[in-house]
Length: 115
Length: 112
Image (cartoon, rainbow over all chains, first blue to last red):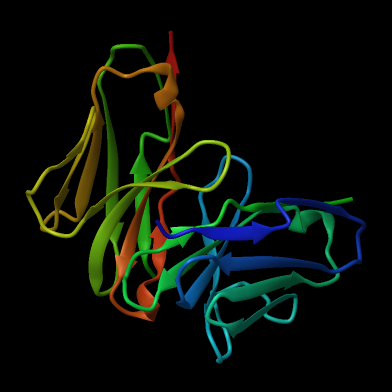
């Protein structure tokens, strides 16, 4: 089956630092990857849609200069939370869509805690 | 703006009970409705519904879509404690690279 990995699975950082989260599709090529954020006891909120080789499309209210997305290859997308603050603490989940399908396969998520 | 609403937001039942979870949607250029189960990590896929009136079934879980009323339900019969989770439904758009809009989720708790 299609497997998506995320790294790291959890990270704790100080306020003001930047954190990079990687999303990889392990056994398929993903032209499109999606980044979601989930606060405790809330649903998944789409942050941005990332297409290989082009700029990401951000949802309304998501700051593109704060959440930098790079989709440099067909198997890797990265999300960098720049100058993280405690309110950025959340569960970040990526999903990847194979080139040949409309399905999305979710990564295991990354729990970010900003002190 | 696309919108998906789930009800109830939380539900507490005892083992053996049957539950029905509701999902209504307004999605631009709607393509399909998906149900996921989320425990401690990322959501795991349950069903994808594209056509009205065709029930999808997997063990004790079943789901159906009504495209006229823009509505879907997820049924779980003979619930078990292992069914305790957040159940998410999401509408998929035919535009925007097939992005998913998620509902708020229903938190299901099954007591022994």
